[in-house]
Length: 310
Image (cartoon, rainbow, N blue to C red; front, side, top):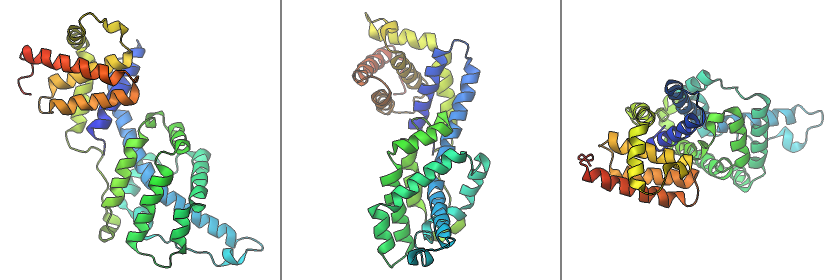
C-alpha cells in the first residue's frame, strides 16, 4: 500500500523537519520516517473502517427511533437496506482488517471521531445517492459495493472537514489522505463475495523491497549531504544554493541521491516524481526550476561517467 510516491514524499517531509531542527539526529529522523510510514498504513485501515462506522451509526439511529415514546410509522418500520449492505458486512467481518484495527485501537479518536462520523453520516443520508439506493427494492453485492464506491468518492474524497479531523488524530496523516483514498477505492474493487472474511487487503508496502528503498534513500540523502550539495552547486553555476528555498534544496538533494544510488530506477521515473512533488509542495516556479536543474545534473553526471547504469 505504501508505494514509492508516498515514500519519496515522506522522506522530503521528514528531511525538511531535520534541517529545521539543529538538535535532531539522523537516527531519530530515521525512526520518525518509519513511524510516519506505519501511520500511513494506519490511516488506510481507518478509512477502510469508515463504511462500517457509518453503518453502525445508522443502526443506532434506527434503534433510537424505535425506542421513542411515540415513534412515527417510518420509525416503527424502518428501511433496513443500508444497514444490511452485503459489502459492508463482508468488510466488517474481514479478519485482516479486524486485526489491523485491533493493533491501532478501533475506537481511537474519542468524541472528536464520534462527531465527524455523525456529521458525515447525516450528509450521506440527506444525499441523492443514498436516497436512490434506499428507494430501490433490489439488494445485490454488486449494488451494495457500488454504493460505497460512489459514497466514498462523493463524501470522503476531498472532504476538507474530514481531513482536518484526521489531522487532529495524527499529525502524520497530514497530506496523506489524497493518495491513500486511491488505495481504499482500489481495495473496494478488489473485494469479492467469494473471499468472505478471508478477503485480503493491500500489504503495508507495495513491493517487498520498498521499506529498504525508504531507509536507504533517506540515509543517503542526509549522510551524503556535502557530496550531493556539491553536485547541485556545479549545476547551478552562478546561482547560490543558499538563495534556493529549503524545500527545493531538499527535493534536489533527495532526487540526486536516488539517481546515484538506484541505477535500476529509470531516470525519467525519478525526475518526473520529484517534479510532481515540487508541484504539490513548493512554489509555482519550482517545478520548472527543479526540472531544469535536474536535467543539468544528469548531463553533468553522464559526462563524468557516474551514470553508467542509466
